[in-house]
Image: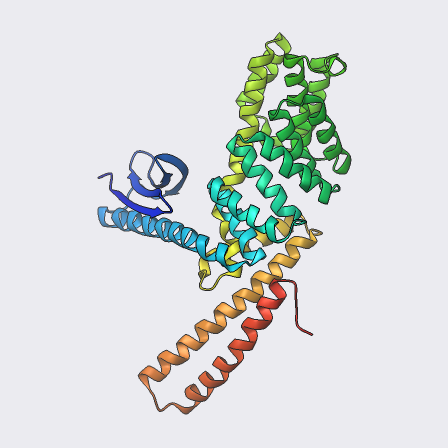
Length: 376
């Protein structure tokens, strides 16, 4: 079977993006990749049956390529429009979309724009800090994440993220304090337990704080066991190797491997969220039906696991409301097609007038509810 290959390029703001889709006959999958300035951003795979025909494979490649290219164009096309809009919700949610796509520079610009308009936007401060952390701009990450913690001291993930930035900036003791603060908020926070182990090992290598050095293997072992008890996906081959070399006293090797495990977990989460990046589309016109239905399916699955998660219930409600607007538009479209076939059908004509009149009010109400400003 031929290895079909399609390529498309998109140039935006002096940056070149390339979408490449191929049929990997060996692994029986259609693989789409996105590159920016020659660096691979993400890879998605669609498995297919090995006995499909050549025409079916080519159709799968074209479909996957067009979908990925359209997704990228829509995302990039929204960037300038959103920055100019001055809409805080738009900018923040699009920032999330860019962050999940590993487009950290664009994400950082959007988060910074939010903070210029609303300095106490804790989510944007956290987002900016994480993008700078992932870019290796540690001083900026520390500053932004310190702000997020200041604004929301009761958020465990903000303490954890701040601790990671401090650790990368070379402040082991302060990092430990933040990871401990995260554990205090949420004793079942696997990432905080895991990062504490990393911080203790880093401190032992750097010899910054002697008090953290004693009983190193025993202390870190306790943190690591707590982490994997909550998050079993941390228990990988690299984890086992890291634990072994830690016991042997090879601290630099152990630190490297534990960071690999952490990054593998982070990347798995990023890939999941990247596929569901479309949360920001709730605030844009014409976002498309599939991203919204994907988000609904995702939220319903999460709520089965966390039925008391009030924010997810609220977001799911917003998704259903936006889905209602989308369905209403589709109904109007069908009435228009009905009249195109039979212009004299009175019930279709009357129905179209009423539907179009109500759509304006429906869109306004849903937009107000989405922005947290419902009309009286």
